[in-house]
Image (cartoon, helix red, strand yellow):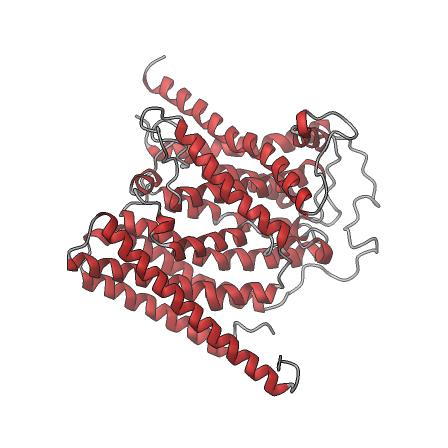
Length: 380
Length: 118
């Protein structure tokens, strides 16, 4: 087949393969996360105790998926039916739509190398809060409503430090294309602008609602948050969407700060890029899983205060510092290569030390005020 | 050669299919034995009382407003970051002033006490 028709069909096939990719990976990531969490909590995680689900119960998630298909879909009385059904569809759609621009390898292993790739990622993931407010509001359930409010205020808030941190690789590269950003990382950006990588990671954890930012669906407080009323596959869609988002932010972090598909022998064997990218993403994903296993849940006021009083100012200061330090070095004549990277690293480290200093001063002040108010309590 | 955004459009359609398919399949496969008790809103087993769709804590609205200012700013910063390599030092300082103004708005919100949980 030739001409436009053939090309459309080829693009469609590629799109199907790419959309299927996160779904398949997530099936095993859920298994892996459950195993790790189990071990962290002195349990075994999924095993073959009752039924056989493959070696090491590897296909437990597939079995769960088949089971959940046969569960009744309940729409509560008084719910806004159309919106109620649309919300889980939107969750999965948005989670997969981001993968249009994810570069799995140097050429070919990407649906489209959009020249505004990074902007597309931000724009599409900004749709996620819509599905949450739709789910929470249409359920006509008080737990769901509280969960939706929490989720939306948290996610839109953490979008700001996320975007500010994402601007820094864009600024260093001079392009919004994810391929260009990867190609510019002769030294992975995490070693050039570690503070930006740090704030991007924290913002990502908050965006996907992983512990310690899990309070939108805090099980011990508000049942399951905004998807309290969902059952069967509609619940499964939220669960799936959440895990796809976990994978997506891990991959995007790897692309922006860990050099994406770059690694040994990629020039000879392009598909190795996908292996390197997924290895890096798995590393980041497991950091999220360890957070999940190790951290307690924060309160909503703590989460929002942390964002607006720490993350947003940090993002602003970091962006200004990097921009000015880089331009100053350029006018001094060190615009290229490792000298530029080293200069930016030094600027970042100085800024990091300054932030730690300010924080410890603020903390000491708060402690002094507390002990002044209640003598004897804060003395130790 | 298809236009890149046409490809994105195709991909959006494909991801919509992936969103609809599992729920449609479950709709076909799942049992449909509804009764009023099953369809009750879940509030820990008690019948729900009062209206759910009410005016809720205004604090969230204030955070939404603050977000709006910063989100518009982010949209302005994308072209600046993109053109950064061609900019002179003074243009970078101008952007710093712009960010500083937003910092001032953040300080204003902070001093106003809107960031405190009421």
